[in-house]
Length: 131
Image 1 (spheres, rainbow, N blue to C red):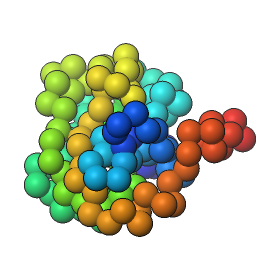
Image 2 (cartoon, rainbow, N blue to C red):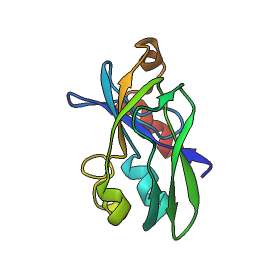
Image 3 (tube, rainbow, N blue to C red):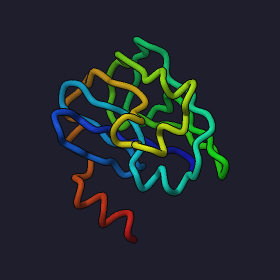
Image 4 (cartoon, one colour):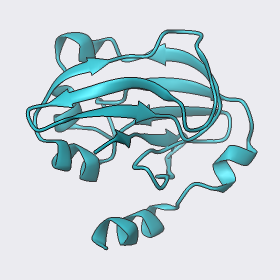
C-alpha cells in the first residue's frame, strides 16, 4: 500500500475516497477504513500530522507502519489539521481495534466543500474494495 486514509465527516456520515480515506463538510475525521486496517495487519507505529498544518487534497500528512508494510496517510480534502489522536503515539494498535472509531488519526477543518463531492459513498467504497 502506498497511501491510505479515510475521512469520515461527522455527523455519522462515512465517505471513503478512492485511496482508502474518509471526510465531512465542515470538519472531518481522518483515519483508515476497516478494510485498510485489515490489509495492513498489526499497526506498530503512527506518525501524526502537526497541529495547524494547512494541507491540500492528496497530501501525505503522516504515516502508518505495520508488521507487513508502511503507508502514507493521505488527506482526501484540503483544510487545516485541528486535532490529532495522541493515544496512537503510545498505543498504535488502537487503529486495528477500531479504525473508524477510536482509532482516528486527525481532525481536519475542511477548506473547500467541493473536495467532498469527489469522495465515494459507503456503498460505492464497499463495491470498490470487493473488486
